[in-house]
Length: 381
Length: 151
Image (cartoon, rainbow over all chains, first blue to last red; front, side, top):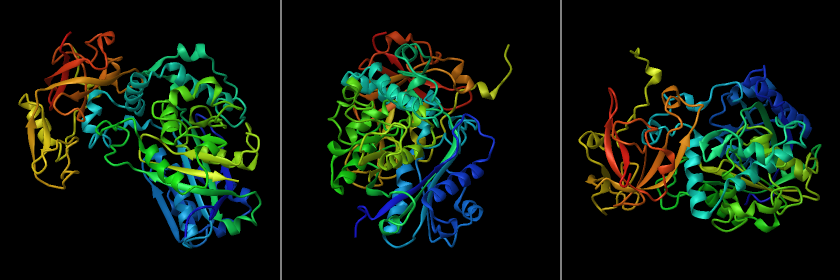
């Protein structure tokens, strides 16, 4: 028994995305989940499986009783922040494919726009491994990834223009997407090159947005999917990735810190798939920071080691390019909700309903946070 | 004259059981790394058993305190207040001369007790040789800092 095409995403839902939304995370979660079930044409009472992130603060008990779910027989939470996004869907797919449940809901609701920045809470973050990093002023994810980005630039000749290519592609797609926080905010090279630093070599536009919002999707068996309201988007392959001797975002203590969890997830993802990187029509790659894109392009096999920056040249990530990227605007320019919007945008592409539709898109790679224990999905129509 | 304000202090390391010896040795002015007694492989961060031979026996090997800058960043605000006050400052990652896979996060400073922004960023280069020095934080533990060998 395998996972390949055994299950499908049949419903997606989301709230508005904004710097500040008035409703609670719990309300936003319920609204996104009910929208996804309505999209699928499935009654809330049929839901018997849930999956979310360990950082999700609304638990299954609260969600299930609020939306009117039935008896729930599978529930799961995945760790490592945005690294868990695709794994929430993968856990539901595994549960449904093995008969543990019939209708699964994955979701993420977060008020990161109006709420506190996690790094300001030092009390919970100073123990292992922060004793080795944080007192020295490596305080934020931007600092931790900035350190790897600087080394990447040094080793492979990557430049700020390469990171700009990533920021620009995401912003251009957001400018086509009315739901995106940056819908009416074009980005120019001049703006990028003169922006304030956050952690040099990373500037403001190398960093994702801070967003209030929630998203959800519904997973059922391929058989059940044929009777749903929308065309099924099949979960073709799924993988998690925790490499040997990996250390989380501060991955500074192994042979090769620039070979991250993407490489581990990718090996398993492609091993179980009927197609390879050259057959991917559109990609939704986790973009908390622009350097994660070249690193992920290498890890998932779109180019060789050290070639990720050069891959972004010549409009490769734009519409009509070699690999259209983050077509809703991504975490950089649509919304940063721990990557869940990359999953829903992948579904839109394969339904043919994206605001930046890749013609006849039939395959999509969706990835979770790189640089931490990660996960990925191959979706197909 | 300034009043005491905890929000203006740099964060102190909170060593766990495995990491405590590192800071104890630093307080004696020594940079030591955990090394497996069984297979002699050094490991960092410290942990209960050896990932190569699974031995639970280890000792702490003294190093020369010499290394090279592997990478660095220059954080700018928004930051915690004590760090914002010195921003932009540097954070460097140093690979140790004796064990290049062991890389320590620290600050490049003009002298052991100088500010985090005491070295002009134009002087910071990947590959530059550095030497460990030891800074005792006010009311707290001793941390390793780094000086350029050729300032």
